[in-house]
Image 1 (tube, helix red, strand yellow):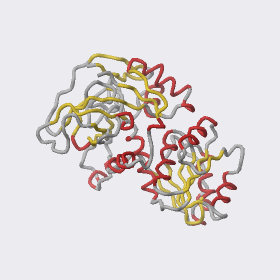
Image 2: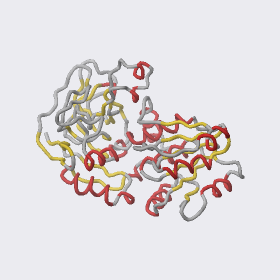
Image 3: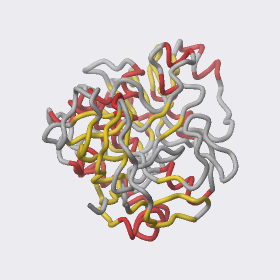
Image 4: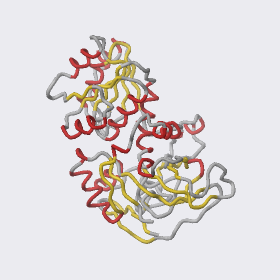
Length: 355
C-alpha cells in the first residue's frame, strides 16, 4: 500500500509498504483525509522529539523505531472489523483518537489517559498513521461520525484539543472569554466558546488570521493588540468588570501576561499553548492578589463524542477552517513547507489519501 513515512529531519518519503493485518479487538480503516498540524511541522523541520522514536530508540509502547507512517489527524471508512467489535460496521465513516497508552499508570487508571506516562501517538510514535491507504486501530479509539463529511471528520482531532481546553476551564454560558492567538487551535477554541454560549474577544496581530476569524464569524470582537488596547476593549464589552475566562493559544510571553490583565478578580486563565522555555510571571500581582485561577490542558481525553456531536448538530462549522486540500505526493512542498512559509494564511491543510 502507499504510505507517507517519516524518517527524520526534512526526510519524508512516499513508499510502498505491506498492508497491516486485522487482529482481535481492532478495526481496519481506509483513511480518507489527514490534517497537517504544528506537531508534524516540528518533527519535519526540527527532527524527532518525544513521543516520536528515533532510528535507534524505539517508543516504549509501539516498540517501533524510525521510519514511521506519518499523520494523526484523520478520518476514514471502515473496511474490516474483528469479531469482537460491536459498535461499528464495514462502510461506517469514522475518526480515530490517535493515542497509545499503557492503561496501567495512575493517569490512565483515573481516565485521564492523555496524561499517560508512556503516551504515544498513532502517526508519530508508530502503529501506522493517517497518511497511508490502510491502518489497523484498537477499537476503543475508533469513533463513528454518521453522515458527517470525511473532510470535516479530519478536523475532529484538533477540535477535541480545543474542546478539552474549554471544558477544563469550566466556562459558563453568558460570560465573556478572551482568546489570545488566532492560529488553528485559537480559531477552534473561539468557535467552541461561541457554541457554548459565551461572548468572545479574539486577540491576534496577524491581519490574515484576523480575516479568517471574521469570515468564520465566531468572535464577537477581534482586536489587534499592537494597534489598540486589548484591556480597554475588554473593559468596554464587560462594563469595566473584565472577562471571566481567558485562553492563551499563542505560546508568547506577552500574550500569557495579557491574559491575566484582562480577566476580572476570581477569573480563570487556561494555558492551551505549549511553552518550550521558561517565562517570567508575576504570581502575586497577576494571580494571588486577585484570587484568579490558572489551568492548563494538553491533548484530550473522553471528549471526541462531544466534538463529533458539536459538528453534527451544526453548532459549529469546521469546514470553513479547511484552507487547502492536497495530494499525498505533494505533502512536503504543498503541505509542510507551505504551512511553514505561508502559515498565517492557512488554517488546516488536508492531505487526500489515494484510494
